[in-house]
Length: 388
Image: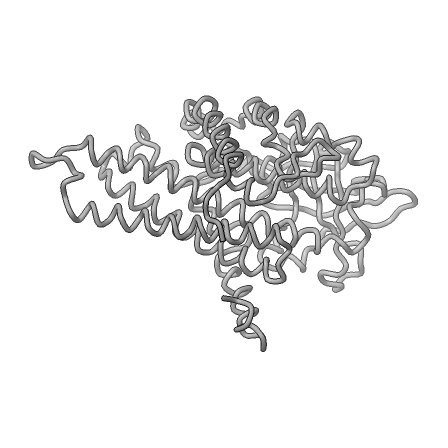
């Protein structure tokens, strides 16, 4: 095992850091405070390839390994987890369209999405189907050469401001479970689509979150991704990568918080000494760094397993998501504590990083669901030979 990054990987990470320093860091607090969705800045990231990192080359993507994509996301999330998290969601939706879309769908949307000229939202969660995604009720009924989609989706990132929706809907009979779900690429402005109010959230304020209602929305059959009944499989494949992505955003947020705390310990003086001289704070910083490095390596291990097509890649992705999002939030929390009252005010980025990181423990499958996935695999007969 080689834990060192290649020169090419380091250069790619540096380009992401340069972009983040120039385009995200100066504006992230303003976007958060005002609830601004920075579409122009996201489009700029697309010019560097960041909107199609692992999308197929056939639609203009870079087709990078998931491991390499984590390097980009981590650097950007250190300054703006919210905007970076949306970019990861857009990457997932773009990859789905490029991997399973028909020739006409890829021609219509592919290069526009990988370039960042157009943006995509991922529509799986429903008001009554969160962790139990297989119970979703949105329907897609065949009508000649089209499908008619009816139902609703909840907590959709970018909703109302994006251009295409990757929608999971039931084409099978009610009660058909996961096998009856299909995936569609749906124009975001199609007749019959209505968007709810912009949700007021604790964090992730630089990206809008809304419900979406579908009322007999007519979609060409060519907009089906894969075959009928492939939707749940596509969704779960997307979520494996999505869990790595969101774990990486937690690693980035934690690294940003840790770096801020390191600087503060040298700058702040109490009782005639810099805070860096106090052993209790030295120990706290050491623990934060140790746990962050462990979480980062867990995420990179999971990404490598996914890249290699390992049989237990989904379990490693679940482990990485659970561990990294818990560690990421705690590191942000401890960095805020080190800053005392200053950490609680918006002059410093700690409270924003903390708020943005908190939702990572919920989305892409709650951390409780991650534990279910891990435990089920461990309790299989041959688990001791594979999970190690």
